[in-house]
Length: 538
Ligand code: DQQ
Image (tube, rainbow, N blue to C red; front, side, top):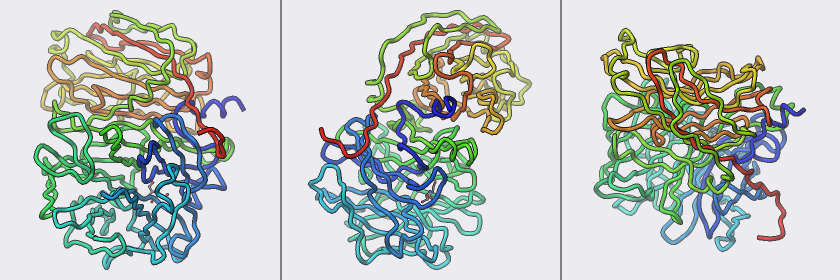
């Protein structure tokens, strides 16, 4: 079926077949990036969790390796679940992962490579005395999972963070260890937010306030903030908070006392879950991966024989202009897939205009676009003080004085399918102009049983900045980055007509009161190489 095979992406990582979810333990070792992932060896639905394994020289082209870990002990008989890697100062690689035991308790296990001098880390050893952590008193046996990467404190002991919940309050617990085999739970919680439910795959890392480099998870000193990030099991979204961490007392204080995990910023406002970061010591950067879930149904996945892809890895830094959010940006290596390009300079878009960009094919693209509007028009924007919300709006057909304007991708000639990604400027309740960045999936597919939400949120646009966006379009995925990555939206779409050569790109300005000038550069993208194992030439 051409429609179903169309949905397979061309430059995102995905297994040859079956179900995949969370990335785990990403790490760089002897010239290779390693990605482990939650995988069902038998089917395109979740189950039988096993650690799939793939390696890459450049985070873009991959070799599939044999499974790293399977369910073969009482302490992981019901699943080898998500975990993280820590590289010790002597080069030893430590993995902590959640095992679901034969009686369904979530316990934490230790594993390590059998042979550190193997660049591919093909063989993994599970510590014979696993588990190394079990749910502590007061914590439900099914609410204790996904150990973080560890960092070392001034007392020489390692810290590991665990996600859980008490009643409906999401919590972060901190453990100390000197050997990764016995762990001590610290008193109290690092962070807790009411009514956010179970917190999964906690990720805790420093970001620099003075440079664009990434920082090792163990880094301490002045000029840094910490990011605490978690996924909410109740709504399948990843949230983060910026704050400061005191390595001596292990206290973490959010910058804004009113913000917390689950009630503040989201990592991505689309379909993007179980994100996990790691420090790439080869290029001095922090990289974030995540699972892009399907929004179609189980039967469709069984029919097509696979489910889910991984996001293009992103670098993560603190936004030095706002200091209130992170910036996420596709790793530079993705640009190696760019082939020929097209430029459209200063395209004038009057209110209500639609301009086709003559790009064929337009199904695998990297797009950068900037938009300028005249400031007077912006000042005149009045929206009755009610504010705006991408997700509850009418999408790109809802017209305001100064929005929406942006790009339309994965559209067919007849506009029976289209995915607009756009800015919308509106006055907030406080009567200040706010900019929103949205992706409208409501008309993305003629299929009836797929997700069709309007995604998005506010994006800070500072004085003197143009409106800018970058889109990675890969057949059934659109990853959209606004203002250098302040607000990001991953759209999972299922076009049935806007496929292969029929997919088109447009500029549009559906605002009623502003003229927009757009400049766009579009590159065609080559497919990434995904090689099966075994392979001869390395
Ligand atoms: N997926 C894993 C869990 C994790 C969840 C199981 C998040 O370890 O909490 O497949 O998607």
